[in-house]
Length: 126
Image (cartoon, rainbow, N blue to C red; front, side):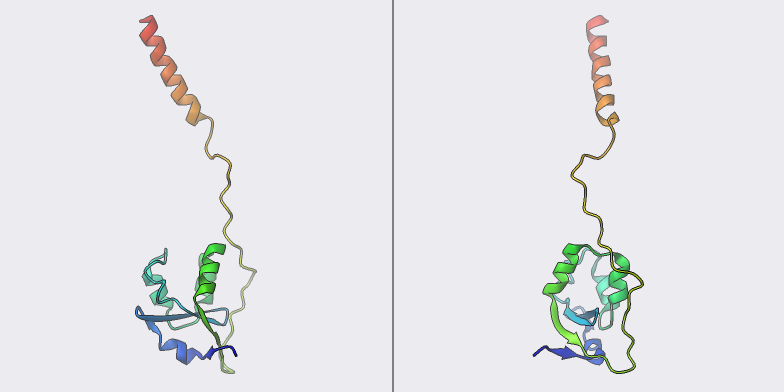
């Protein structure tokens, strides 16, 4: 049987020692992750004890971040009849993966070669 919590239950966990977040109607205990969060603990504390789905999507978290979130899952959210459900305006798009191709232009190589060549020419011909 799946564990369920209400928004009222989640709201009780909004401190650094015990912090729950709701993302897409799933409840996550991020207490152990708060010191490791790349955006700082303030971000989590601001959203602690409430539905953080919109804030989570606004940042554009990577697939890796989404995998970490899955490990912190503790329960499904049980909404009462009046509580709105977050509906994204578009499908979340993960950040692009870094390219394995080298970045920058040929000038990063040409300029030092020209400088070394000019120095060698000066040393041999001056």
